[in-house]
Length: 330
Ligand code: PBG
Image 1 (cartoon, rainbow, N blue to C red):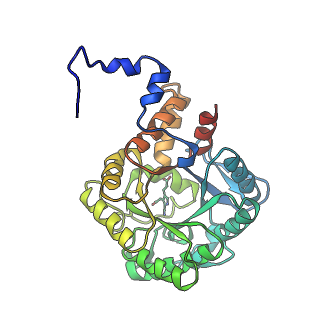
Image 2: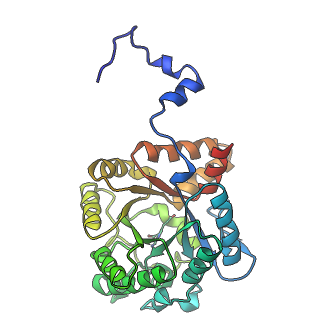
Image 3: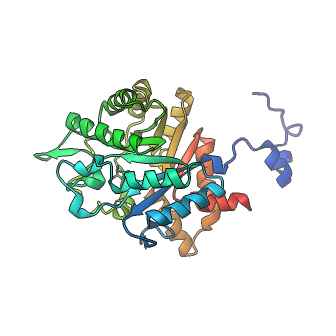
């Protein structure tokens, strides 16, 4: 790297005006980078606010359609659905997960028909359908890997059948990407993308989300036997490599900001698109501090999301998606 010694070299020259700063900026955020996670519920023309996530609500499918239309108008390319599942439908074997007419699949079909331009991403994990709140099938206190993979493959196939453009396996079972990819190819869904949550950590930052999907009261124990230990980063790289080799098109690092080192390492190591999930707890912290007047929420939103681009991410799942798109449009 060539750096002229001072005073020939003065870094402040290119910072002098906004025009110069824009000119030399290395990474920028655009609406193209955003995937908007949205909670869906049953009912008509209604929504339920989520207390720990100010500005976020569970939407009925008709309201979801309106929201998706607005997202497209703001230039957001993708929306990610998380269903709030009636507790009466939760079972030990999670059969509702692959019901072709479950809430998530109905929402996907409706959305693809009403707003075909938006890419619909769906979540592949059993937790919304599980009496135990776990992402896999539980027997005698153990989260079973291979039985869970079979269930996840059924679930993924039903989602692809409903028209989902991107499947997001967030379950962290071993071998699920290969099994899903094989099933998708066999069923004629060659075009369905898999964005694997390859590096998903066992994190306390998911708290508000579990409330939002109605899973927090149910969870027995924790998710440490399948989600990554937060002391590890080499293991995250091995998981990403494994999932890419099994047929994932894109990979996810989750949570976001506390795991920026993983984003950078992953984007350096593989040519594949790496996404970050700025999760519910991250969103809640920014919102709470902003509502108290302790920080400038809008500026922190832009700064924290720009960090993902700087770390090499192709895009970000964020509850701020619509706010960001609006701010960028101004
Ligand atoms: C579960 C799932 C979780 C999130 C997305 N999918 C929570 C968990 O693993 O317990 C968290 C998202 C967020 O916190 O915003 N399959």
